[in-house]
Image (cartoon, rainbow, N blue to C red):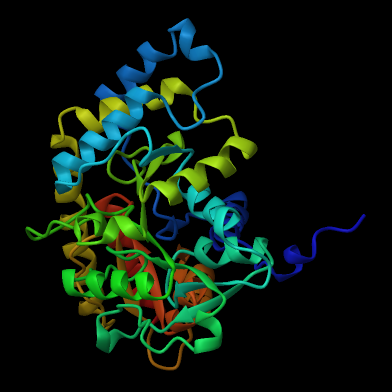
Length: 385
C-alpha cells in the first residue's frame, strides 16, 4: 500500500525519538535522568482531581460532548481571559475547546492552508507549527530568531513570493524552547504586519502562567486590532499539571475560531465533558497552585542556571517557561552534545536543532524533574566535559 506523499517529508517527531532512546536505556537497567520533555513531575492539584471524580459520575457527561466545548467550559475560558488579561470574549463565537493545544495548532493548518501555500514559523519553535504545514503538502518559511535580537522572530524580510502564498504566521511567547519573552511593541508590529498582508496570526501562549521575578506574560489579544487577525492558544497542561488530561482552548478572531471549529466538527467529537468540568475547576478555582508552581520552577531555574554556569556552560535565566536554553560547549553540535550526554552521562536533553534551523548550537533543559535529580544531572554533565 502507498502512504500519502506528505508523510515522506515528515521528520520523526522529536519527543517520540527521545522517549524511544530513554526506554531502550531503561530496559538495560540504566539510571536515566530525563531533562528532555516538559512533563510536570508533580500531580494535578487535588481540587481539580476531585472535580473530575465528581464529574465522571454524572450520567449526562457520558454522552457525546458539545463539539465546540460545553457552554460552561467556554464561559470559564472567557472568564479566565478577562480576569487574567482584561480581554473580553464572546464564549459562543470567540472561544473553542481543544483536546490539547497541539491538536488545535495542527488542525489550524487544515482550516487555512492549501497545498503549495506557506506558513511563517519561528526558526526556533514548537515542531507542530511546521509539521502541520507538511501534512497539508504546504511549505514553511522559517523566520530568523537570533540571540542578539532576543530570540524575537524576524518577519521584516520575508520574501515577496513567499508572502504572496502565506496564510498563517505562528508566534509563541513566552517561547518554547528559548524562554524568550516578547514586548508589546513587538506584538503590535506583528499584528500590523499580518493585517497588511492578510495573514492569520496564531499565537501559542501555553506558558503564560509560569513566570518568574515578578514578570507577568501578556496575551496578544490585549493589543489594539488583535481581534482583527489573531487566534491564541492556551493550554491547561503546564499551569495546572494537566498534560495527560488533554484540555486546552483557542480564542480570538471569530472567523478563525469558527474555521478551526468546522475542521474539528468533522474530525473529532470534542473532549469528554468530565475533563472539561475539571478544566472549569482549574480555571475558576483558587490560583494559589499556579503561584506555587511558578515559585517551584523559579527555584529550579536558579539551581540549574547556577550549576550550568559553574561548569562553564553559557545560559540565560529565563523570565518564564519551564526550560533553560543553554549553549553547547565549543566544538560540539546540538546533536553531538545531546548524544554524548545520553550515552556517557545517561542524561537526556533536547538538541536545539530539533526546534528549527536557528536552534543549532543549543540544548533545551527541562525543569520538570526533582531538585536532587537536576543537581545529579548537572554533576554527570560536568564529568563529560
